[in-house]
Image (cartoon, each protein chain N blue to C red):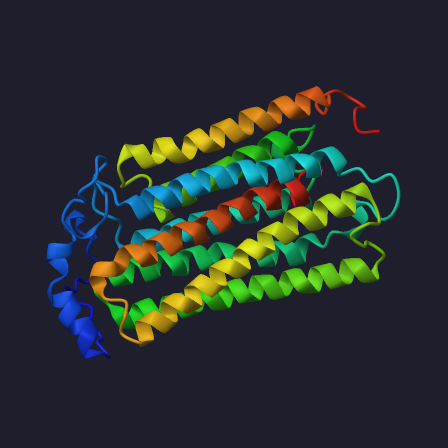
Length: 118
Length: 210
């Protein structure tokens, strides 16, 4: 069976999907959004005095941009947005467990306290 | 309508029966065991890379040897990151192509993904070589050990992904990857995208966060 790249992939040819997968155009637009976010990330290095991320705001800004990129790739490219919820639960359970364990570990080493790395 | 390109009679015959193969999987979840297993594997990989990234954060301030600020080449690494990000686009287009029954585009996008992955690895080898010449060996400092272990592990994952992509390309050229086996491509795609999102985290945490 062949369909145009302008049409979504119907669910009857997909494994475990509850919605039709995107058209190719959506994937290209998603990649452009990811490229734009990456450009903003690089700008935080190139222009450290830019008002948005000046005054110690660069770390929160970078973490938010990183989380947005992570979510976009998982939801659109890895099809979590279109597949059954159990896959989202399985993946994010592992991710949340990992984050919780390692944030606790970093707290044990007092990494978030001033002067802890010297 | 996109033109479907068949180079092997076996692919054409297999695809003729494809719709029957795409019914709901006979499992409790309605998802194939292979796909569910890959997602669980990726969840466990979060713990592996979480440990390596945490170790890097703990050790990123070296007691001796070059510091991260002295040695990182952010413009170069940004370009590598962009290359890997675009490989995710070509990968998802390969998955999309086989799900639409377009074997020609499957091969083109799979080969493009492997080429972009190989470019990323070449960049990493170059970066490691430059760092080594600037005095940052694996045992130079706790920072260098943590850095090489983290980025090296990621590089090994990318290399394994390239091998899987080349295997897909080989299978497709031999006519052994019909449309009803599109899930195989999707599972390799999941692995590849995961490698990309791990780099998204490494790029921000290791290279950009001061």
